[in-house]
Amino acid sequence: MRSTGWVNDQPMCVTCGVQYPYGIDLGVCPICADERQYVGYDGQLWTTSAQVGDNHVNVFRQEVRGLWGIGTEPHFAIGQRALIVPGEGGNLLWDCVSLVDDATVDRINELGGLAAIAISHPHYYSAMHEWSEAFGGIPIHLHADDEQWIPVRDGAVRLWSGDSFEALPGRTLLNPRIHFAGGAIVHWDGLDGRGALCTGDILQVVADRRWVGFMYSYPNLIPEHPETVRRAVKLLAEYDFDVLYGAWWDKVVDGDAKAAVSRSAERYLAHLGL
Image 1 (cartoon, rainbow, N blue to C red):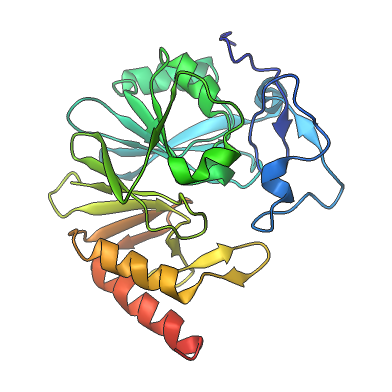
Image 2 (cartoon, rainbow, N blue to C red; image 1 turned 90 degrees about the vertical axis):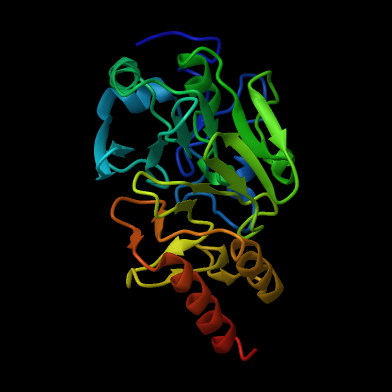
């Protein structure tokens, strides 16, 4: 396995998969201690990406032709999959997974490498620093309103603020503020011109994939504030998108996605009695 400044034996939380630098207080993962996550039922457990690599592998699948996802098997931590979002100026790694090994780097390089990383919220920070160094120290774009959750601020971390930021041509980060104050999604021109959103679980594709959900805390079932949901819908009204890619394999709204977000918000607010 390759070695970087962020070596693969630094502590990693088993529950959320976020990697921390040496020398911090490893009593409890601060991201998991927050009410939007939880400390595992067996208490705080730590591992390393090297140990994860001993019995896990990353798999690559296309959500649609030309849009590759990366997921770790068997399931580790939260279990999200990342997306390699192509376009002018190079590939954007959207969200992240905790395992980055030689086979993963080689496969991504076959797909054109990576020019930048952008992450929706702290639960998916995973091994972002190790990923950055594996591809030559590429920038990691995180919203400034989530700065308190960043394990360490190094030169790769680039904070953006406000409602939008173009990370790479044709890939604009947006801040609906759902789930976290810095909760981000990416608007992408798409491969077929229809426009797409990659949302992680900021906009959560639910079991009935005609709809999305809005939650402040998923594991603890705390709903998002109504005004935050209204703000998100207003923000997205300015953008065209027909497809929405969620955080897990096959969690895709494949058509009429903009209308799906609007009607989902209306349903959500109605069930809150608003």
